[in-house]
Length: 302
Image 1 (cartoon, rainbow, N blue to C red):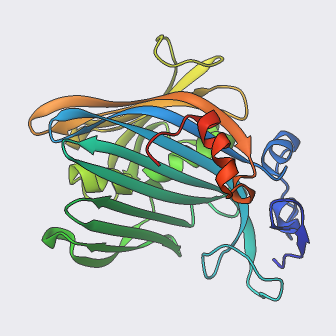
Image 2: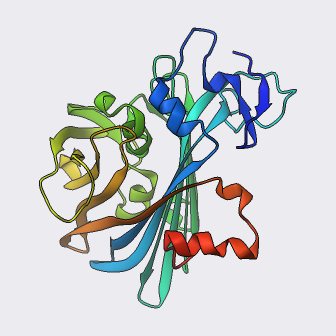
């Protein structure tokens, strides 16, 4: 598929965001919400489990569409590029929290094609983790019917790893897929690759593992929103479960999440509760005066 470039407020946007050579076109509500030149930015109050305790912090989820080269697996930026491209829903997920005197920063990027007919799973995942001890970096690239995994770390256990894994759901892509096709998420017994940040925090292997997916209505009072559902992904062998609470109706805004696992012998639950949401062409707001938008979002530690 060749994409013709146009300037539509978001920078370089292309016609492949609307229709490709096979005739695929996203539904009108998706186009109205995601192709209007703005990103969706949500801020969450975070209590992150680490070192057998709950640690205060915050999380920010940034969702935006962009055109993505399927061969190089990078953002399409130049008009003379001959590579094939497809529209992706991108998530930049940022978690920052304090453990005693020092802090953690976990940054994940997910690139999920909107056209799930031609692209069954996400094309690329990257994750970097920083704390006062050192840094780690993980990247997964879709190749054929599986993924190439690259891991680099300050820590001896994962200092330099390159390997391939078979086809499976990626936990990291659950977040993007539920924003436009929650009905496509795995239900019942499946195989899933744990989130790259979770592999860093819990030592869960970054490879396909038995998992159980489920979808239920949310009946609690902690998370706020209209007609909320809960998508759960449970890894029985590791006693770890992720629960994402989101609105049943499109655009399926994420009200928050919980994640239960064992940390230093204790079974504890991470929780993130949404405190604010804005829609903004944030890449245009990089002057000192634009800090008012940060205040509106309520971001504290960035």
